Length: 416
Image (cartoon, rainbow, N blue to C red; front, side, top):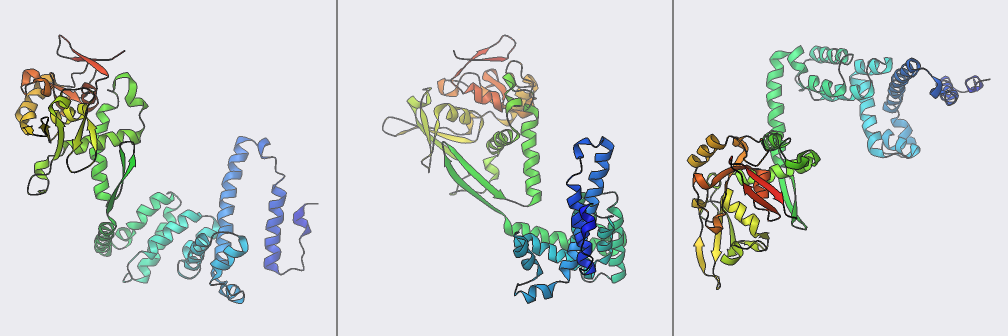
């Protein structure tokens, strides 16, 4: 005899019904799921999902009318009472209580659809959120129409798509109200986003800092677009397949560094009465030495001499060269950089990154001195060559030997 047949008929009808459900679930434990055919398992999975949502609908409906249960036990509300009795976190139970009240007392059409299996729990939550967000001045017939339309959409769309449709439902049921409501909602959302905007920079050691930012979606979209512009062309062009080995996060981090180097400081606010710049200080001997360091003015941070030379070659950086007694021997300015006209000429001439085998287009490249500026290189077209950001770093990496080829390309070979 199955356990479903052992239900105590003397119990109240509601509890007897629940006992029957529990007994059926107990019988289901013996179901040989691994022996079912593919079609059978597919049917079981779909049916169980619908049944689970229908059970959720019943639980939410009971929860919504159980204030007296909580009151008798001295609990704050039915959600808190249930969390204590089931040893679950109170947060989700409070969400369930609010959803149950909404489905039972306000949006009964959604509640009925959940109980009938026409809407799943996630869809019901999204629909209720959309309906609750509608402005108070919307007439009841319009609200009823919006509820009916969203329930109908649930037959075709998952919660994510339903959320989008819910935000625009007034455009369907009341276009004259929808546009004004959307404008107010967007203005309020943008104001909240501005209020939450923040950025922190924490040094984490080993030459790295962690940047954590919360910005409006529009700003994040713009940043993502900029970073994709830096990363996309390099994906297939990295020598040795490094581009394929790098994670998306590392590619994006490198692109962010390249983006900052590409910022024109003359378009930034004045800093200390002058255009915002980065000042690098180093001795003349260090500038010519492979294994040396340079200091960043105003901080305790240091960078390698090779990185300083690369920045002086391509970025808006002022390298201050000091003599033996810290006497300023040369205050290099943007004359170390190729002019816009020269960079255009280099793009027309080189067409791409001139590293051997690289196909990154000229628009994504940086002008580089074939002969290091610190060693007497000249900022002219004959001494200039276009390199992508990856190969420009390699050009200033002393672990590599670079050779100028007859066709104008540059070959990089790692030192043995």
